[in-house]
Picture 1 (cartoon, protein in one colour):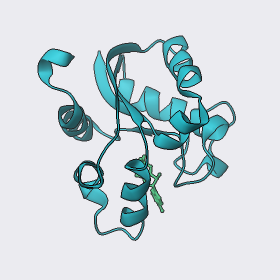
Picture 2 (tube, protein in one colour; picture 1 turned 90 degrees about the horizontal axis):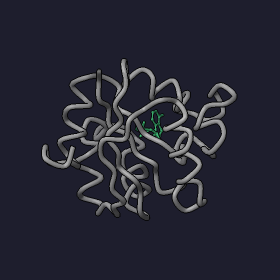
Picture 3 (tube, protein in one colour; picture 1 turned 90 degrees about the vertical axis):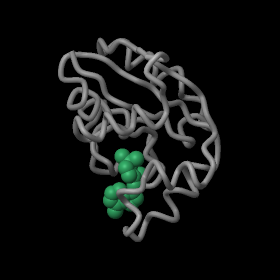
Length: 136
Ligand code: CMP
């Protein structure tokens, strides 16, 4: 079993598709082992995305992620990191495969509906950023 960290981003929550995304997560066979709705401050979003701090999109990304509530989750499944990235699809919804979450619910590379960890070390950092051990 593996655990990964996932976010339903502010654009998807605002559009009212949180329930549809959760249904797709459950239908895909993930176990939801932690979930919370939060509204990140700008500083919290900057801390979460610190690996991107030198990138030109960092300011816009952290403004967007602190613009409204999002849903943070811990998902468990065999090979959960890859399985969740496959379900999300490519970062840019325009390049995502049909049937993926970003294709179906994302509008642009900035407003792309969901986030997922890209490696075990990232998953450990990201889960620890939002959840205490006893919550999972
Ligand atoms: P996410 O998986 O949350 O990780 C970083 C986010 O930055 C990414 O999704 C995109 O929403 C956003 N982003 C904006 N521009 C880019 C870019 N050129 N490359 C990668 N990510 C980008």
